[in-house]
Length: 430
Ligand SMILES: NC(=O)N[C@@H](CC(=O)O)C(=O)O
Ligand SMILES: [Zn+2]
Ligand SMILES: [Zn+2]
Image 1: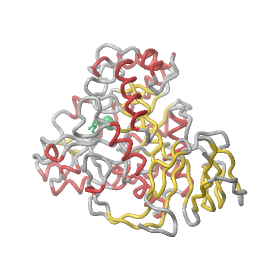
Image 2: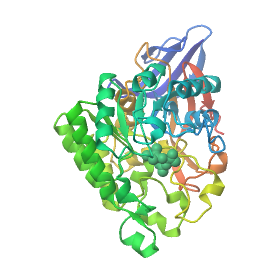
Image 3: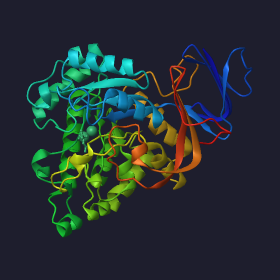
């Protein structure tokens, strides 16, 4: 099967940035260059006026299978992924049962294979049942196909347990992903602690709950030599500490989520539970710091923390509703807004969605180099559209961006040389 993507603006971060064709043969990239000859029998995808980029890589999603299939399945989650341009996704282990053993990892990989769209990379638990006590069999998880370990959502509070986890992780060369939250400081909180939480009468989560754990984890990474990846950082303090850790040469990477660089705690005012996520939306000073961190390279990766929850779960009082929002189908336009704003160049935006995440977890993705897997997103960067959650591929609709007019849309997604999502082809606008 041969595909020729013709005449698009190809951005392969650090390698190509200009008009070119991309030739795909047998599931891999065969050539990239201007005016390639059309091989006989090739399918041509015209892409003039569109961006042609390595398929996006999301280091942080929650697909709810096994255990909470009413929120999301691996099928619906990977469908949502490719609709958002993501060709590889890393799935957190807070399923039921928790992905703390090979059997669960293998089950997830089988489901993803059957779903047949995005590539799924499971993240194994750090501790058994993510209870923070006894380490999971990290070597077994690695061998079964886990690409990182994390107790996301139930952060490891015991620093000695975390130290041992990092020592094992280092031995297996697997990154440790931490959701930085001191559970004692955050206990009972449901939004950012500050003037607004006081006004609304809602219990707060101070930014220090995140900062103290970032400090601890950076120290432990220094002690153990482990690769540390900081999930969804949301505070100015986190950005400052990551910047300093990098300057000292530590193996630390960090991700930020579109909601944390797009929204502030102000949107909590309506008690809209779609503004409730963990970590919470912060202040405009924090948002500025996140943007500066993205701009100067302190924050390597944009990840969604796609966290689907059912409508009836979100239709509760603010204090009762679960934390989390979906993100796969809105990440691209929210990231392109940073380009419009001058925070990122187009190339660095693509880097943070594709190349940098692949590198952070050593995934064979994030590039259009000859011989690489043919995972490609074709994007109409100027297409304006309204976010309509009822049209999401995801099973869940919990987004604070419903009704937003946004710009930038994925029109075609290719995995392994196969078109797995197509909104329309140029010249035939839907
Ligand atoms: N981010 C969230 O608000 N929720 C996540 C858990 C997590 O990422 O900590 C979930 O699984 O729902
Ligand atoms: Zn988390
Ligand atoms: Zn998460």
